[in-house]
Image (cartoon, rainbow, N blue to C red; front, top):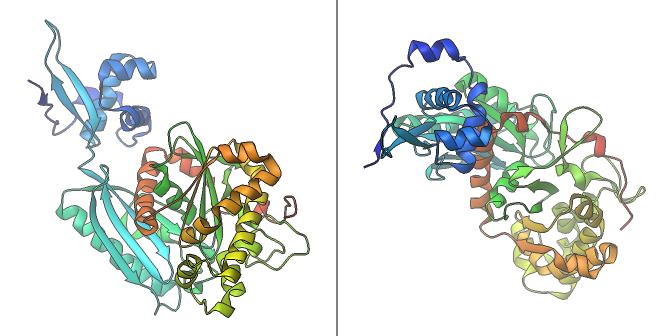
Amino acid sequence: MNTPAKKPATLPAYFQRRMNMESLLASRRVLRLVYEQGPLTQAEAARALELSQGACNLHFQRLEYEGLVHGERLQPEGRGRPRFRWELSRAQNATIGLVFDPPHLFVQLEDFAGQKALALETNLKMCRNHTDVAEKVSASVARAVAVAQERGLVVREVYAALPGVLDPLTGAVRRAVNFPALDGLDVQDLLRTKFQLSAHANSLGVAYYYGEAAEIPAHQTALVIYWDLGLGLVFGRNRQILTVQGGDARGRMLSELGHISIAADGPRCHCGQHGCLEAYAGGWVLLQRLAKFGVQTLEDLAQLAVTGKPGVDATIQEITRLLGRNLACALQMFGVTVVRVTGPLAPVFARGQAAFVAGLAEIIGAERAASLYVAVSNDVSDRLLRGATRAARHAYVYPDEFARLARVSSTLQGQHLAAG
């Protein structure tokens, strides 16, 4: 009969002498292995990581003491010491995801098994500056922390998904075009200082990517397009975000690819540059062009798109075709095989999906364009919230990966793709 191993109240002095009790860095490789492949035995972990079983035992004891893994005693095979199968303590550990979707703030508490423990929605409409927003954020996070404590959950990480341009070092919002009250808000510092929580702040694109990642097959390179008032793009493989090296040593996420110019004398974009791809295909452009049809919000636009109204449909076909032409090179360069489109304007893309593929075909050929799997996401809001909590979980297990993600791809702005 298999029985759970009993967690020690304290680590024996022997372990404490041999391990750094102030940091989990030494044991993180073992934690990642259990996260990715568990449950597994000590011997299996030792072989996979090329460590001795004694060293693995130390790491498992440390991780168990921290409440991150638990061991199940296996029926012994003949004589010898008992064996254990180790797995992640998913029901005891949790993350918090914050999604800023002005004028709303969404906060979700979710355990490592993906079970939702709390979901909150706060209206930020009356906030006049980032101090007002910070008060709302604090109240919502305090509620999530309280629920976690009530349920015996340990909050390991918080991820804040923010719109606009973020400071590359601090994560503070430099400019949120559609909600100026966010300007100057440093959510990451607020969470770390007020709640003593490990926290990351980055773009909405990270949450959108992890919201879609569960639907992306392993070993496939994917482009996730999140289409709302702006135009964001995230490339990933094996549920890890792909980065490129910019003018410094930090890995740059290509979420700002929408701000590469496609025409030097094109219309002015909200980022301040001229001729950006977003200035031709952002949601705000569609709202301007279709205002004569009574369109005022993205919801109006999504509802109107499915009617097939001639003037509306022609505009959608034109813009999605332009997207295909101007993203073809990037798809080819990264070896993308899957394209997933999400965000409030996903229904609009569905109407123009064939035109998008046709635009790709103009650059990379019909056969290659047809080989791509292009899909439109459903339940966008739920996926986005789950994406934020998954991003937090990923950030906790892979902190070095998130540390490399620059928040502002400013070196990409002003560069040019082929004119569309």
